[in-house]
Image (cartoon, rainbow, N blue to C red; front, side, top):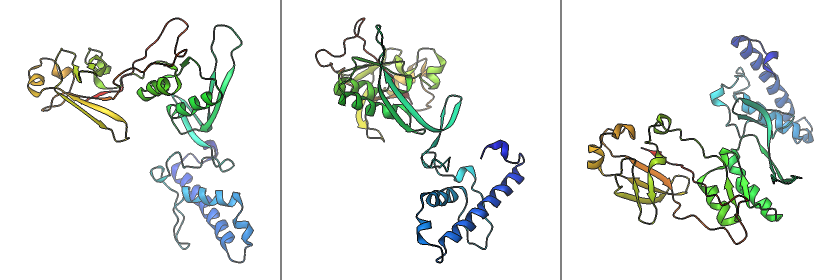
Length: 290
């Protein structure tokens, strides 16, 4: 129901919602009555009504008043039914745009010479992040032998994993803007963000913004199972650095860097990955200073 159809005052709105919930409970109780034909309970619309009612109201004993759920007690967005006439539609938001429905992901050619053609269309619920669909879309293009030499994507799809798998599994260069460094060091813009740490993957050490060399190199998976490396610097060196406040707010521990493991840049198969105007190697920083 659109907001403009609801009472503007919160008490009146709660009262209306609980009245609607009471009506819904009475309908479901009548449907569940043994005297009601069983086929009625199997209708898809009744299943949806039951789900929506349970998501929006507390299931209380029949002798107690129905209570409308607070926003904090609603199911998570991927499970919350937003439109009873389309139970699979979900709420989505991108920047300032909000909607209820789905997302459509379109891949098209962008050659200098026309015509440019749509090569893949994928529809998903509104809730999954865009980058999660990247491997699926690439596999669909490969299955139809439509793998491009270069694929230009939005910032949400430029991740370390996608850059790596695009080259190793599909022989393509993934191109696009890297996500902005949202750390306070990156926002300060004074040269002490994670991107200013130079990593030597072969020698297994890093050089900090002031030229200090790391002393700890520890490779282990993160909580999602992705391989990462933790790099830390010497406590005495950190303590003596005149600009330590620019790169970490830790009071007693030295600065540390956590980075996805990517020891070398894979080579594309023969005939793939050649850009029209030269080769392009993308670097993305998915690190955080502690």
